[in-house]
Image (cartoon, rainbow, N blue to C red):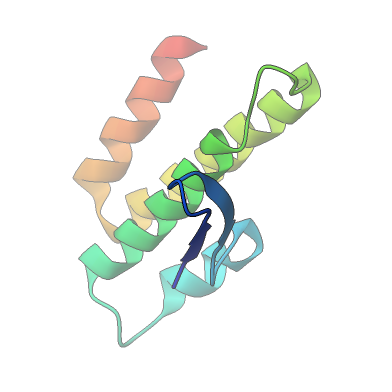
Length: 95
């Protein structure tokens, strides 16, 4: 679902995704997707959010990404409890 656009030297210019943080509840409810497909897509969204943080990101932006990650991991817990519990345990250790 994602599309990468690169310069001729291989440098990434733009990455557009088919899904974003606003779609996570919808993804979790897909009936035709396997558990793996759902968790993979949710983790792609999570990864994309962290990859877009930079040294110029504000604390507020970082905190928002962390809150969104927790929402994603909670949804993963509903889809795949062992995996979701592992992600949530890791986040809780950091807090």
